[in-house]
Amino acid sequence: MNATVPGAAHPAPSRRDLLTGQFELTWSLFEYHLERLEPEDFLWEPAAPSWTLHRTADGTWVPDWAETEPDPVPVPTIAWLTWHLGWWWSVTLDHLDGRPPRERADIVWPGEGAPTLQWLRTLRTEWLTALARLTDTDLDATAPFPWPDDPAHSVADMLAWANAELMKNVAEIGQLRLFRAVSRPG
Image 1 (cartoon, rainbow, N blue to C red):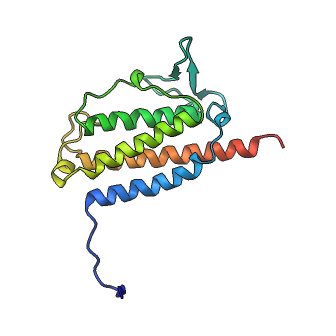
Image 2 (image 1 turned 135 degrees about the vertical axis):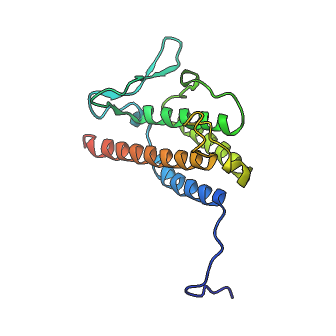
Image 3 (image 1 turned 90 degrees about the horizontal axis):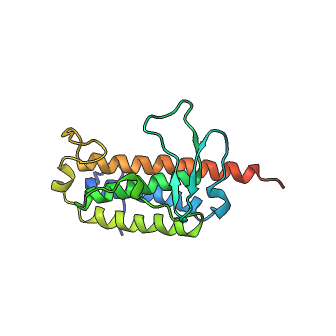
């Protein structure tokens, strides 16, 4: 029988395991909302001004963007938040995998509903694969993103930032989904 003795020391998880556990906890909260999103939720604009995505003549989607944050900051749609999440996550994976990071305009949002859900779930799989191969030496290396050329931030810091960014975006998507659900007539 494996009993836990009160006050007994437990081995500390590795930093990688801690970051992976934090990610998985946040992802489980995200799945709650992903499973309930309707295609109509993605482009719903809860207020003006808002940031969203716009379909171009060739069928691709272009996000609203400003190099300098406007005042007031526009309320993002779920579409914009999922694109934003996919953008920073893809670029972080580029850095982790030693690839040249893609430009913001190179990150293509797949569209409302199932295509975006599949895209995000694929990014999750790529993320867990990347995390699983990291060593302590990898985690101690200088992070190339989102703090270019700042030796004060490690890859472990970058992963913690990505987890925090995911947590923030999950909360925003969840709030928008819930707000839209209670705002629908009937």
